[in-house]
Image (cartoon, rainbow, N blue to C red; front, side):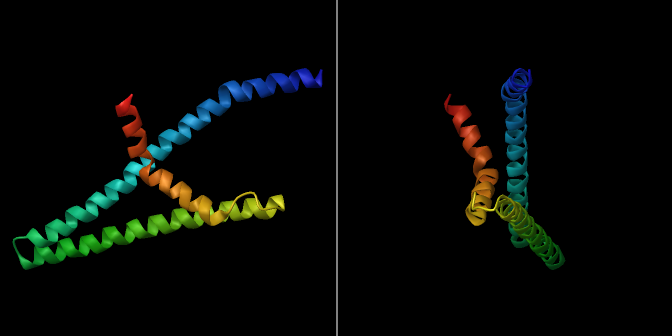
Amino acid sequence: MIMVVYDIVSEIENEIVVPIISEAFRVLSIIGGLALWLMVISVVIKAIESKLGPTGWARAAALWDLFSNFKWFIVTLIGLYVTVYSIALIANYVSGSSIVNPASFASELLYRIFFGPFIELWRNALT
């Protein structure tokens, strides 16, 4: 009886829950990657605006915004890296063995978040 219930729950988990969760994480990854790229684009726009401003105060204000936007971009990347690194480190500590290298896991995740949307769009464009 218990094995039958376990098999039914496992089948529901594998057929329904896992695909929905993986698709949700893929969509969130694409949204997060595009948001990070919007931060990069805003830094580039402010850099151009700081050179093309008509007056000195406009160029200074654009330069101030450039540093402000770049600061938040760096803080976001460092925060994401430290959070993922900490989660992987805690998972290794709780399991008692080295499941994953926290540094490579955090770097790979940031790479997938940052460049994943473009890879996904490229794959969809080719099919």
